[in-house]
Image (tube, rainbow, N blue to C red; front, side, top):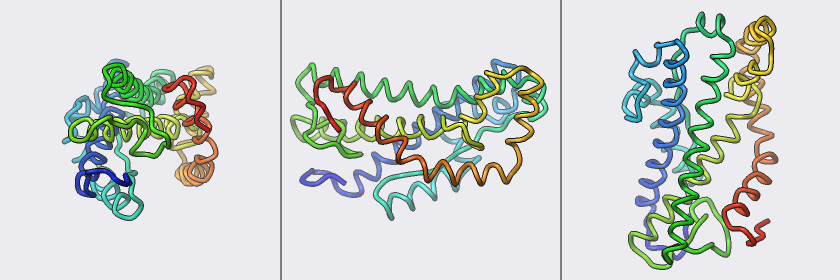
Length: 238
């Protein structure tokens, strides 16, 4: 949480949820759009090819509303999930297309990281932002004044780190994460089908999530540090 800021917990909650819902909606809409372009209209027919969060919330209300709010109230940051429907038969027949669909979600989060970084750099060039002495989830960039610049700095900070977390976590090549679905891009068609049949077992998803959750901190820390030093060349964050 920000100390010495003009923001109340309620204000930060709003910024957190706005950042979260934009990140999740973009991720799932990208999956849905890619599937439609590659031959599977299932998500399109369900309304998921949309940056309107409503169909995504309606499909996964627990992961998009209940869990994010509870995680914020208990830990001060948000976690949650949503999902995009797809035709399993289409994916089995077209494993490489399904892999490209899986890749689309993390790429959407990468785009939001880059957009956040661009706005931060523009704000620095115009004299509204500066690099903070100490990085936190809500302080990737600091404002030179209160009010709107401070609120925008908090929002951009959350968007930058939250989307980086979603990008890195989802690229871990373990089921049920998107990274496991991308692997068929490197396999021949028959091997890809056998691989997909193997990772779709429910036990594999439980094992994969357990390993990914416990391993993620060690993976994310150096990537986060690298991203910050790319955002602020010469800052030497560590």
